[in-house]
Length: 299
Figure (cartoon, rainbow, N blue to C red):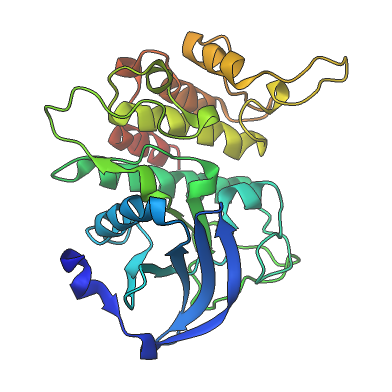
């Protein structure tokens, strides 16, 4: 923990407001204020996950504006991060108001979705461009947090429209991230969330930053449809067809027989870009920097 000493936050500078939510059963999240800034305090509830939690804290301490890192809190292994008032991208896409601190719906226009997509890509460009490249390894809509660029800590009412430039998206969920050296031949098998995982990850072979690009393609599909990936295969159909098992879903992703879908009115350039990211052969997927360029030339 010595490496984190420079990021220690004094208890006297933090004012607790209320409990927020649990990130699974492993973490407890509380809303607080740190020197007048709205923050979230995340603490580890399960001692078995403390090593990965500390690793995440150390990794975040090396990041700049593309993460939500702030510091550590006292001696009880609590992570202090910017409070992202919009919650997760998944909540926003589901038109959810499940966070405890705002009751209105966070509706997203197409332009706001494009802004979010660009911010997510920028985060990947940053991670993949570090001197020691970092793979996110769990890019999902649950690990994209939203806020607004306004200094206010609360969202406007649902009757007001947000300007596309006011929406800010930042990557989160770095507990599975890791730096990768040039001579790394393989990484942990099965890391990440199934419906976002690249075929090579599910196959248990070698993978690199191009696995993150596949996950990005899934998120791009989700931004368009506002549905969970492969949702049509994961629920009972009107004809009584049962949902796919995890094993069948994995096989479908690995073979390419199952692909994320797009709406009929989704722009052709966006679909083409996302499908390039979703190529079965990782060598055919564009890098994060190339995706960032292609997105910007469309504006």
